[in-house]
Length: 395
Image (cartoon, rainbow, N blue to C red; front, side, top):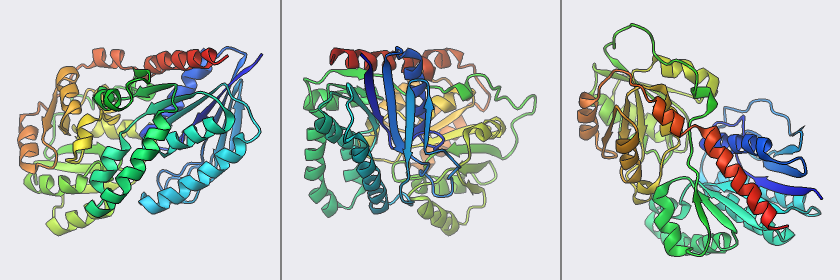
């Protein structure tokens, strides 16, 4: 008798974000691990992470025993209200899709809690067990970002949603060891596993060395990724660029909810050594990484972010390029323990960042052992077998 798994993920390739890359790698691993009698349906959206990046994509596709269904959602500008509206449209289409179907397991990957909450509702609707992949502690982050009075009102509501969601899970995976205490304290009876993010195949083979060319002046510092409240680039880049005027030039590739603030701060400080560019496809990033001298990473100075392990770290580390990272907590410990030739400074502290830049060795380094330990396909292979085991337990 055939078994069926339902996978809910708001983002999926060719969308450009950490959730999309993780979901695509997991589906690939499941495709290799699934027995012929087990079917996988993936419910996701048409590309929408960035308003200006909407590649032509088919709404549905079938490959062997994997079917992918992409639902259209309204455009958004990374604001809370417009993102909530887009997610509501996605949720309604998912619930309509599963109304007359049976699944042996519901799987969801979620950073902002809502995809996990939707998956919990689906499991209740179709009476199936739930496996959650949790990529962020949404409540802890959002209540630090929101204005105080709003956070006070919203926090108990979100806590209720989280509790209802997580207590329905048969199994929860976390992407950062920094999350472990949070779950042990609040949900001690739910089996927990750790399958982190990792180095994707696009970054396994390219050579990122520019050749024999010496490090130029100014040094080329590259940032790639989201420009939202969680990154807080507006709190560090303009001030740091001003200090390093003549020594370094920043190239920032990405988009997000606070990009406008970053642009205003850059104009206000008058620094001329920062270039802002829109998101680009991953295959084009290879050349960007090759031309960079230093890779820049920053998380905002929020208590919740001391528990995260940024997915971008794995991509950066694979290049062998020097890394300048404004992080605290678990991410800082991870860098110290696993990533050579990376300097860490306190988030939002431009003077400390400038000092770290001065200490940083601008030469490339061999991180092949790190890449070997954190190859995404191997991590997802282990996770895929765990998911399939959960599905079999329900039979």
